[in-house]
Length: 124
Image (cartoon, rainbow, N blue to C red; front, side, top):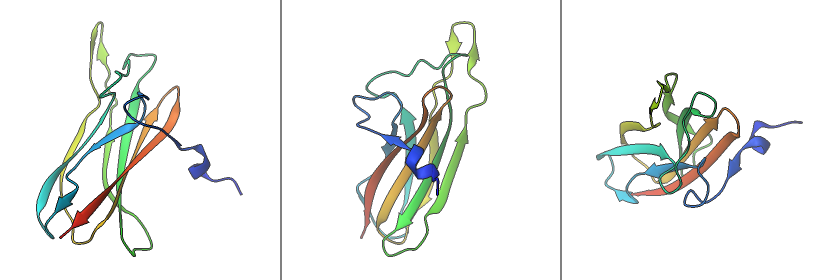
C-alpha cells in the first residue's frame, strides 16, 4: 500500500530551508495558554516567489498514549506578493494542552513537496 507518510521529508531546519520550525515552550502547566508559532527558513531563507513558495502549514498534537493526533491549526498562504514584495509564511495560534506529547508540523513547497518537523512538549 502506498502511504503519504513515505512522501514526508525531514531534516535539520538549520540546514534545510523547507523544514517547518516549531516555536513552542518545552514545558508548560496543564491548561496554560501559550503561543505556538510555525515559521520556515529561519536559518536559510526560502525564496517565496511566484515560482517557488510555501503554500501551507498543518499542525497536529499527538498526546502521549493517544491513538490519533489532534489537528491544532492550518495556515494557508495563497497570496505571495507582487513585484519585489513577497510575504513570509508564518503561522501563529494560541494553544492550551492537558497532556504531554508531540507537536507535528508539516509544510508544503510547490516545488519540493512535503516537509515535517516535530517537537516534544511536557505538561506539568
